[in-house]
Amino acid sequence: MNKKITTFAFAVLCMLTAACGKVASPADRAPTDDEDTAVTAVSTDGEDTAVASMNANAKTAYNCLAEYMIDNECIGISMQQTFDEGMLGKAETADGFTLGEDGGSEFEKKLNRTDISGKVTIYTALCEIHGENSFFVQVKDTDTGVIGQYPSPIDAEDADKVVWNEYFVSEPKPSSFDSDELDLAAKVAYNAAMTYLTEEQDETGADFTDIVTNGGFPQAYSAEGFTVAPDAAAEKGDSAIYDDMCYNYENVVVHADISSSGDLSVTVTNTDGSGQGMYPKE
View 1 (spheres, rainbow, N blue to C red):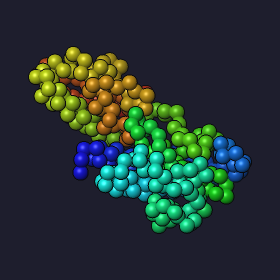
View 2 (tube, helix red, strand yellow; view 1 turned 30 degrees about the vertical axis):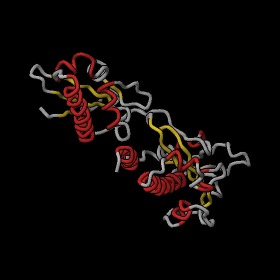
View 3 (tube, rainbow, N blue to C red; view 1 turned 60 degrees about the horizontal axis):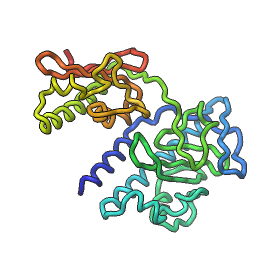
View 4 (cartoon, rainbow, N blue to C red; view 1 turned 180 degrees about the horizontal axis):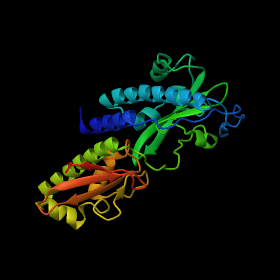
């Protein structure tokens, strides 16, 4: 397997292990004939159940597509080519593929063999996620118009903003990880930083202290730290940290430091400064 395939597969696995987050509320009506009509949320007991179901269905369909994409990559068919050549059938058209229909493509046949529940329509398209070319899946309840999505499952408060056929990303929310999660985040950031430092040292001959103190981590090695946000302008070592953390630790703040003896340490806090994870532990 070549490097391109390995990179693609790793990105997919990162997304598959990302937390689904909160779920959204169901619609109070089906959409109009205009497919661009957004679903309106309502406040009722168990309001999240319908969209939770659609989000779960979207993740199942996404997993099915991810496996199909990786299989194609292994035989030299790129993600772009898969879409350009119509290999996904109705699922990549604006109307989408209604589960249970006779599938004209291998992917549609695979969808019909999943455990997706209910009468639903499935849509997928290319998009950019965390600065990388990727794809998303939306699933719509054919009767009620409730929409679910993966990645970026729909939040209840955003249900009235979601548009069919358009990848939706909610506004960033403050992180609220507990101390154990922040410790793990710090270890992930540390490993990413060490990989960057080792590669830089091999390439330039500079020691770790020189790399860190001379701009190797433009934001992480600063008083403000580096915030792992979708719109982060990450460079150098910050970019390495971002790549390894963006799917599972969004909006945490990373600080990198180097001791007088050249030992790296990393701390991670929530957006509001609460909590702290550290690696290595003192």
